[in-house]
Amino acid sequence: MVRKNFDERLHRPERLHRSGRLRLGGSRIVTADEEIDALIARHQDWRGARLSDLRALILDTEPGIEETWKWMGSPVWELGGILCVGNIFTNKVKLVFMDGAALDDPHTLFNAELEGNKRRGIDFFETDVPDTSSLQTLIRAAIEHNRARTAAKR
Image 1 (cartoon, rainbow, N blue to C red):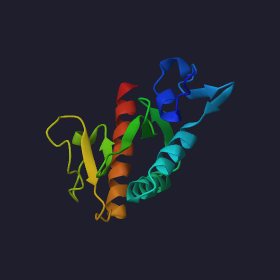
Image 2 (tube, rainbow, N blue to C red; image 1 turned 30 degrees about the vertical axis):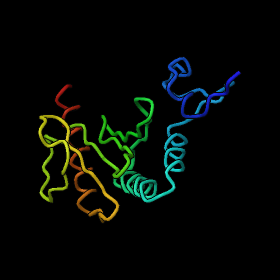
Image 3 (cartoon, rainbow, N blue to C red; image 1 turned 180 degrees about the vertical axis):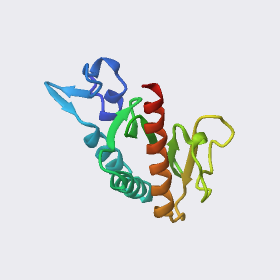
Image 4 (tube, rainbow, N blue to C red; image 1 turned 180 degrees about the horizontal axis):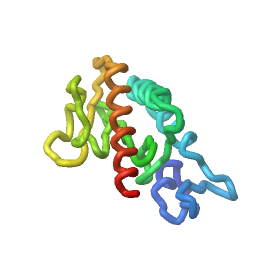
């Protein structure tokens, strides 16, 4: 019998619990926090540190922001809807704002996925120093956008 490693097991849909959280064995359900911790731990270089810093910044922006784990491998931060998704790539860490095209970006943080009419992204490279104040302003704008959209549906 060939034993599958952790990453291979993540991509098996039958391992999902009905709550959407991953079941790795027995009745143990892995939480989004644990998944994100594991993702950061697997990247023991600047990328893991950068995602960890961005995670802390996002969660500190406003009480009530929730972390989720979607699409079998992406940390997602939500408040009234998806705010942003984080991903680690070979040479960058990316934050994608799902409704970024609808947000004001006075500090021109968006530098990726500029051609669409929905999403906007921010690519962080190793030597980049994130403008934390401007990033939190952008996150707050995404929160307000989600709240306005929710209010309009009522």
